[in-house]
Length: 157
Image 1 (cartoon, rainbow, N blue to C red):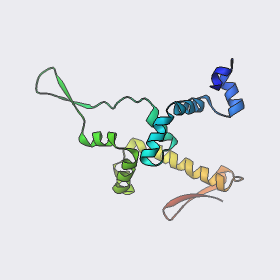
Image 2 (cartoon, rainbow, N blue to C red):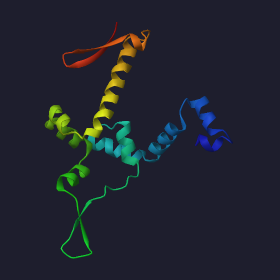
Image 3 (tube, helix red, strand yellow):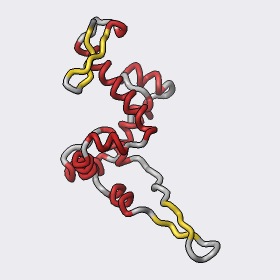
């Protein structure tokens, strides 16, 4: 590993020679250590995004199941709703198919309110990135947002 060959200044060496941040380099190292797991998952479902690969190899705490009081005093019984159990155990491809069957409008209707600002920020960032890619010499203040056929587009003024 290159990190062991650099005597000091690993972060500086990394930025200079690889144009990577330390966190990205650590992610790539982690993915390399779990290559066989990732390749097995790709064989199973066909393709795997970087985010999905990261989730696959990241050690996650199991979701805490809900607790309900039992009939005996001083004891609790742990239960998890069957739908949550099914969702937690389903592969990404099945979850994607389920969301597609649910439909966008229903998803937006049942989506938790605290997700909306995150979704809006991501969508806005993508709109701006696409507009800047199409019109690289246009200043951001000169972009005008238009809705065309239900799709929000950014165009130069």
